[in-house]
Length: 330
Image (cartoon, rainbow, N blue to C red; front, side, top):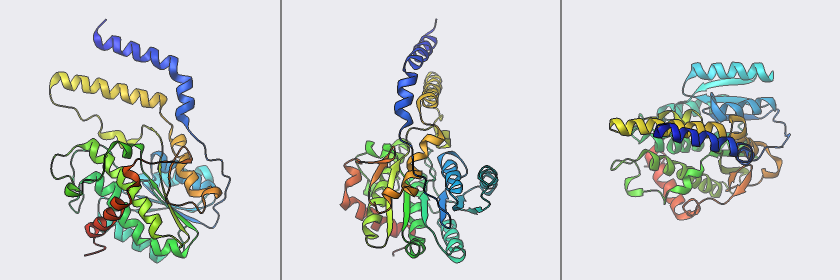
């Protein structure tokens, strides 16, 4: 038996032994709220697949007007059609939103502000993970640009409507990955030096936590809450760039094996889309969190973020830098 075969056999045996106890642990919390959303409007970015789609379906089942804000209109229309069929809620609509384009964000926000009388929940769900050093339409590093800057601008442009509709909520999907970086590198915020796709992702998720906390402070007294969350370990389309191989034939082979092992492990032990959406849903609808703001959630309950995620000075600085980058301040 070759080395790779022995490794595979060990992994399979370990998976069989650990499956039940580990799956019980990784499934996490469940949103038990039965709150209805009739007459309320919910926007979900990246809602055509993964936990975003599950969240959209849940909001539709509760009676909300659900707006799927997606880059691909074709995929979004397919998802909306499916959600309408599954829930019987015909008030599920689609609008184009490309978070890698500030122009697209502004166009989307204008459509919403002009046409929608209210906005009760904004769920900043969309994201990109582990891509090469691509740039957005506006020249920002892709992960920071999409995961943070696009949502930062979108939220700010919809704040008046959220305030008008208060009590309302902003829910930002971050990641436990934020805890594995020491902080935002303000000297190279656009990652123009030594790009590391993993570190870039972690910093973008830290930016989500910092943004959510700073937003909560700025919205104090308005009736609009802001919370961030870790959905859990889930194999979604976010991982579509993870199979990029390292250089060298032997290294490439090992990279393929490693990626397949990781993919298989997450597929077996990680959360399903339904399980992964529970914390987002909880933050969006649970009555007990109606007035809760500025917190970080995991498995449907508040958890303490990393020290970097509680750095109020960094959060304020990130807000100021982000305003300048997206053109809200000169």
